[in-house]
Image (cartoon, rainbow, N blue to C red):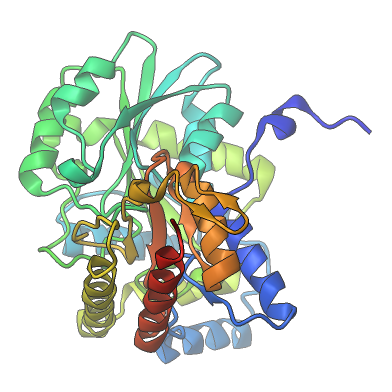
Length: 396
């Protein structure tokens, strides 16, 4: 059997690969601490689960509209207005099976073969693969720990060509946790306003996990409002990863295109999850603040422990629930099984020796780093850091 060229060229998600390896090793009896998946360890709040149960009782078991139930789309519009001071209409909203599907819909609706998509590195693993699958050409702009993993308007503009069609970024960022502040976003907006052939995909899934200040969206600037597509969802802030519900807000023509493509691939998102999402979007901010405080405490804990390990360089991310330390100091060092040449080698060594699962930075476009998720308990974070310290000390 011969598979298609597109599937043969498609890379497997490294975050899911490491999660799969962790599960397999656990099933074999190994004591694995997994810091690979970006998944809150909180249980979905009770009022959201109750909304799902009510939806079942009320018979919401039929095909929903492709773009989402009208009351959910209105709840999303209200969320944007009250939380972000952004004005959208329901026909600009499309609900999908996770923010990942929203991003795929957008890319496949906008990108033709040969179109260029500008992506700052590090980036979330699937951006580049989706672009390539659509026939587009990823154009990477490198950022590193010295710049807090952020790029400037000048760097982006230098990468723009007549073939540039889309700019994709996340703030707060997966994997770095970096956040673009209002002044930085305004600088980007002023630049993009001069290049109206480029759309902006702003991935804001970690909006509520922000330790710096209130969330800022590039869509707030009128000069680029019609060029901007926001992607968000309920998985991270409301501990609803398994419910698989994301959404986008876009210019009407883009929203209609995404509804069209979704209608041919998956149709409407799970009806029960949609009703639960309405309750999620109406969650009191105080409940979200409690989760955020836990993530902040964990961030401080893991950073303090990593800084005590010679050779590891780590910045202080202002959002999400990841740290992205530079581990290049260990390249070239040896262990019983061979030599650490890359971040991938180091990740596999830590899985084998320390029994700690992390994700190589190569998957995110940065060869010098690894990603650790601190969306787990305090004692596991301390244990994981201690195991990593001991394993790295064995290298020579």
